[in-house]
Amino acid sequence: MEGKGFTHFLDLGCGLGRHSLLFARHGFTVDSFDLSREAIEGLATKASSLALTNLTARTGDMMKLPYADRSMDCLLAYHVISHTDSKGIHTIVSEINRVLKEGGEFFLTLCSKKSWSFTEAGYPKLDEHTIVKIEDGPENGIPHFYCDETTITQLFTHANLISIRHIQDCMQNGTVLNNSWHYFILGGK
Image (cartoon, rainbow, N blue to C red; front, side):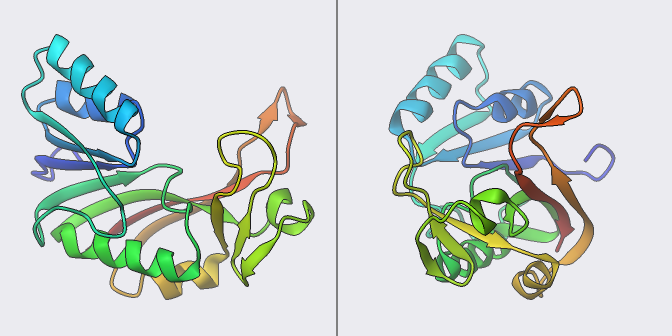
């Protein structure tokens, strides 16, 4: 993003804010957004302790982002927008498109249909792209949207897809620990 003139960064689904803090330390105006009030409060406290006055943190629903049209230069949504169903993903992608400036860029991840959790786990399906995880833990009862490259191109008809990487991201010392696959997508508007 250096050299592109980007100054306003949206960390969509920021969690504890590691990316938000990095971008703020590098001079970006940062909007950090997450569903978790605890995460946002912790991030706001951390930003304040570091005197990062260029970071604003708020809670809300990614289906209705509280930002003006074309207000963000760049956006990151790392392992977050898949937490919905097929209808929801279209709404979220539409919101990303709405808040991103012309010439802006986004980097996001989506769950791949090649993953064990979609193909073999036997989780209940809500629709042809969505399962609901039912094991104990923080994702119990949470829908997860899964896609393939065809679905990605259908979702991002408004975007210039710069790079799509399909990565198996759960390996240790060359041994597969879990058959988990994600798409890492860089796109521009």
